[in-house]
Length: 360
Ligand SMILES: [Zn+2]
Image (cartoon, rainbow, N blue to C red; front, side, top):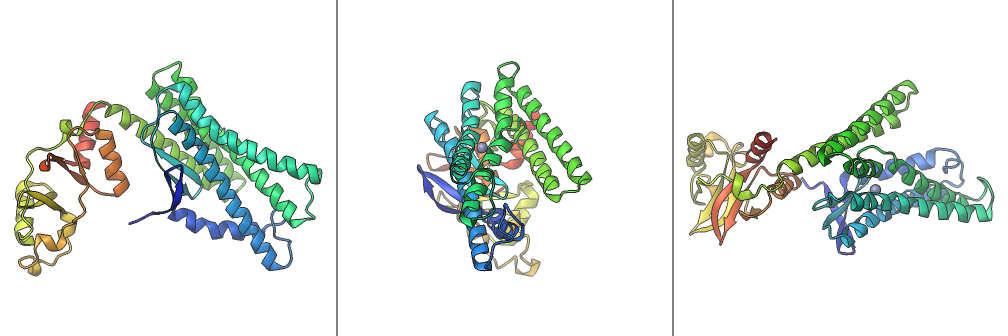
C-alpha cells in the first residue's frame, strides 16, 4: 500500500506527504477554529475563522518543512545523501542514506533544524511586538502572525529536548559519543527519550490530557526505532549482499502451473522464486501470490498470471544494511541478486534477520 505521496522537490530532494499527515490536517483546522484566542474560535464570520485556521495550519507545516529542509541542506553540504523528506502526523522526517558518525558534524546537522525554527519564530513574534506590544486578541491577521511565530518557537524548543527521537536526542548522542562508544551513546540517548516519554505519559494520565499521552507514545516509539536502527546498521557494517545471500536459487518458468509451484514450495521450503524466461529475469513469485488461488484452479493458472513483474534487484557488492532498508521501504520480503544480467542469489528478510542475530 502506498502510504505517502510526492508533492514536489526542493534542492532535488523529493518532498512527500504521509497519509497520516493528510488525515491530521482537517483535525488541526477544526482545533484551531474551535478554540478561543490565541486560536480563532471567537472570530466572526465563520468563513474568516476557517480561512485563518487553514492558513495557520498550512503555515505550521511550512515551518516544519523549512526546518527539515535545513537539516537536509546541512547534510548535503557534508556529503550525506538525502533520499526524501516526508511530512508525517507529528512533524517531518528527513531520511538520509547514512547519518555521519562524526559527532561534530552530527550535532550541527541536528542543531540547524531547531535553530531555524527559533529564528523564524523569534522574527515573527518580534515583528508582532513591533506593532502591538504583548498579546492582543484584537486584529485577526496579527493574531495569525503571533500564533505562527509562537508555534515555530515551540517547534524549536520541543526539538531541543535532549531525548530521542527529537533533534536534541541527536545532539545529546553526539556529545556522549565523544565520551563513549557510539552504540552505547545511542542506547543512553534512547533511554533518556523513553524515560521522558514515560514521565510525559504519566503526566498525561494524571492531568488528564490526551495530547500528552499521544505525544509520549510517539516519542517512545521513535526512541525505540532509532535505537534499533543504529544497532542494526552497526551490526551489519561491512556486511555485503554476497555474504548473506542464498546462492542455491531455484528459478521457475513463467508457464509453470500454480499446482507445480506449490509442490516446489513444499519440496524446497522457500517462499519466493525468481521467474526466468530464456535466461533473463522477468518477475518474482511468492507464497502470498498463490495463497488465495482456489485449489481447483491451481492446475490451469500459470506463474505468469500471478507473479510480480516489478522486480527490485541488488548486486552482490551492495551493502546489507541498504538491502534491509530497500525491503522495509517497499514492504517486500525478498529481493533477487543479479550479476552481469544473471540471477546469482536471493536475499530475504529472514536471511538479514538471521545474520543480525548471529553477528550481535
Ligand atoms: Zn529537526
